[in-house]
Amino acid sequence: MAITNQERIAKALDLLKEGLAPFAEREIRNALEKGRQVPAIRALAEDPLFKEKAISKWDASLLLKLMWDSWNDVFRDVLGPAERGLVGEIRGYRNRWAHQEPFTGDDTDRALDSIARLLTAVSAQQGGRRQSNEDRAPAADLRRAGAQGEAQGRWHDDRKPGDRKPQAVARGCEPTPRCGERPLPASGVRS
Image (cartoon, rainbow, N blue to C red):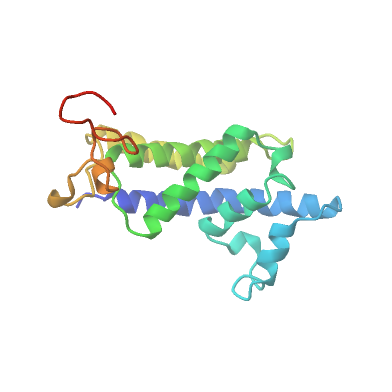
């Protein structure tokens, strides 16, 4: 049976958790040891659902939230603006996955690529030590899954046959004119 795009995203998020947790935990620990105040970690530590859990046990959603909310206090020193963009983008994909929104093949490709890029950036920042195969494993797994999907012929679309509307229409906008523009009057001249 073919694996769905939702399942691919779920596996990628599991690999993201596996690769991101040790990095996030180490960087947070380093920041706290340097005496930095990290309000995001304090807020999460006060949450009854998470205060008893080690960062390494958090799911991908919490790890991404932690990275986003504590970027300037912790992660800006070791990752660049491109990686911050990846964190934000992956949070969006994770939320779409959690709310069971459909993923096209292109969406899936993009999500897997973004997750692999973030994992590669994180594993490259291993405190100056040489990268081991274990450090690179999550990103390599994602790239391998992407290659297998391509070899089998593009990911299939998770949308149902009746859902084949363009994204703009699904959001309540007609594809032309663009969202936010006034429709053309009958004469074809803009008002």
